[in-house]
Length: 123
Image (cartoon, rainbow, N blue to C red):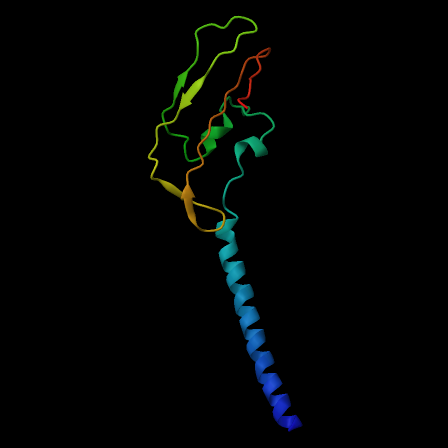
């Protein structure tokens, strides 16, 4: 009886070890694709303009997209104004998210204001 129990435990232990090693090998093989996603520019860069003058947003998948910016010609002191940035893109386009699922594209804009101007957040 003891010998039979020992052989069963040995077989189950070998099966468990095989499953664990397969899981470890597959997680190592597929983790590189998940880690390849870029960090968003607002978290990675202290200054949004590189030394070459290029804005860091040009490093993402929207780098070659035409943009439309609507801003007033002049602004008086202590005046609230609106800036509208439009990035035309296919709303049905998807990207692969960090968990491997497909999701909406990360779309955003960076507005660099001259010194002395600040922005008012909508609440």
